Image (cartoon, rainbow, N blue to C red; front, top):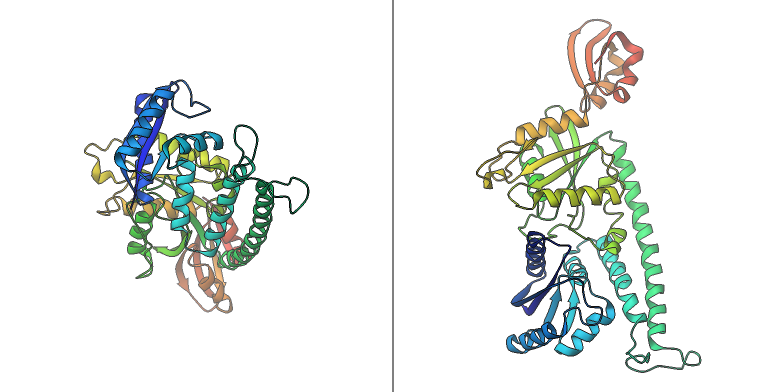
Length: 415
């Protein structure tokens, strides 16, 4: 396990609590990246110094701390300019990275599917490209010299940048092909008429635990997903079929959000986040035991707005309430560990997914029984009686599903 120094600058615009929370999250990111923190150093400042991030005196303290601990890397909570990280690295004698680079590395470690791996590679290239183009010292000369085998005075960095851009183009093409295949899979799913619910929330809020709790209650045996007490344990979207009473639906587990999620990651993972954009409802899982749950809730809502998923019907679920002594929360409360509240949550999901808006009574001929078989998973269908003409059925549910039965209606009621 690599040993690192965690560094951070508290700006005047940040409260003490906000800074403490941000540094705590950065520690968790380091743990998720399998890094051991052997020292921490912070400074209060009005701004991040453009040359060395820290002020000169604090830079000397950082250099001494690196030598004292034999750390192999410095991780900054604050975003660093390329040149700033370079100067600090030269002063300390070890690599200096910021939080964005740390998150990119975690994503690289966690990616399992081909799509996620390609998305991460593209995000990494987009993050590194400016560093290649800015690989020059204070005098404007390129570090490592220039090459002239492709035209007078062409810089090595320009050749590498061109290769990066070519690779990014190839990755976009490969991802587009995967997206086409994924779209075909989604069209096949849509033909089943099953509604879709997508889990969203801050990373480590308990989305995967929620999914497994639902699967144990109303899913197929052995279909549980991976759950770990770690930031970004889930990157690839998982989808499982669930059944609550008479109704079936698809449940999606998505990548967690985090404060100041790097823009290139939002862009790279847009296709993965389609599970949220295409859902019929969102289940916003909030960690009720987290003192900063309100801020993290707002960050999730802002991210949903950024990806265009903020207009979808959403249900907020306060998870991990078993860890909260006094439960004073509005809305639905749940403990995935004990199962308390799960029954109410699942029934509320069905009410949102399959609202009983209309009700009709129809005489369904026996030669149309295939309609009953096809729709009984999505509608409440009660058999009132059977006679020679067919089956008298009362049907409740959304108009879009009831419509095919209206030609057999013998009376209807608006719900």
